[in-house]
Length: 425
RNA sequence: GGAGGCAUGGCAGAGUCAGGUUGAAUGCGACGGUCUUGAAAACCGUUGACCGCUCACAAGGCGGUCCGAAGGUUCGAAUCCUUCUGCCUCCGCCA
Figure 1: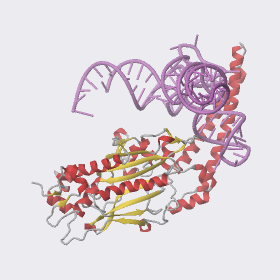
Figure 2 (figure 1 turned 45 degrees about the vertical axis):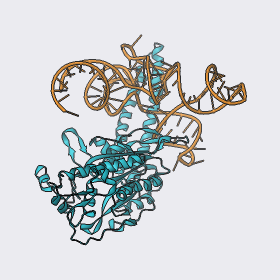
Figure 3 (figure 1 turned 90 degrees about the horizontal axis):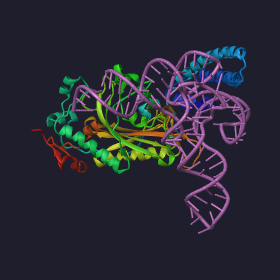
Figure 4 (figure 1 turned 90 degrees about the vertical axis):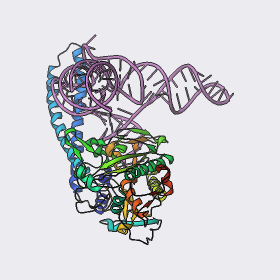
């Protein structure tokens, strides 16, 4: 949610900034609602003040044994008036909220302006894609040949876009996740195990609702959503709290499955593990102050990169353009890992600074260490990493001519020292 | 799933089952000050959030709202009623 006073003061610049993000809306209508809101508040409060004062006097009269019936009748009428005005106030508040809820965060000045991913800016590359002197295979062929991945049996159990991993396929997934979490824990992150089902309020707090309801799995009977990312529970952990500024930043990481309906992407990435309805992801979340959050974005991105570096996977870092960023983000770096089978880089992590956008929705504040009034916190999130896609990248990048897959040094301790994956017996 | 109890300010804890100067006693904590070479102790003072108006979105002032949440009764509700949520205890069930 945007800062309303900012809109009130600079309607033109906010409108222009939102246009860069592909959002148009009627500012004038919003400002008219705001004027109306304030006018009604004044009326209501004037009447309330009068009623408070008079009620106090009625109390005194009654205690003295007097009769106050006449004033009481007057106040009855005032009460009715207040009730009517209050209803109007509520309606205006809701109308304003309905508009504000659908407005995305404003992009940071360093974000390239553009309509879509074509305007994304490459920042840097790390590692060099292998030159393979044999016919490379994609992760589905590799995994099925090794007997560790089975998409069709998963489809039998549930349906399309689900996966099943056997033997080393399952163990590798577990090893990758453990490796990632250990790396983050060593860097000062607190590991958190969260619920995988969340309330509508939580989805609303991080910005998945109300606009993106179709992207999430929803359990109607219990009014709960399956999390599309652990960013949702991790951020909402501190909803409606005022944190101690000297304790910031809070740095959390957690492994959860993520559930996405992938509405509107029916034809894309239909093969393999790239785009499935359920995948594991290690997520990092920072709750920090408003002064240092963009430095923190560099730090969380570097932390995500360290996973790819440890696994010896080539990648590049992209700054998403205004048109390609997520709803709550002010700035986003995507980490894209090299996939030999696709001869291109594919997203494996997304690191965003949501500034005060989610904090305003969730009511997360902090008392500055140097004193003064409490302020809205800034929240950041970053995948570190999507485990399923990491498995894909690992199988494809470290495939060998003989069909086996080499295990990078850093991961071997998690696999009992194993240095390569061979066909399942 | 069944039965019962509880939800008050940073914490503890009054006030609720006689509704009226109670944003809320008291204690602790925290902050400022006096005292002290310094500290402790003692003493004095301060100590929530949000919104509106005035206005520089400052300070100050005025007003409003907030005693788990949402409604209701009433001239007036922390106090009465309804619903919801959370926590605790007992029974049942279960990994």
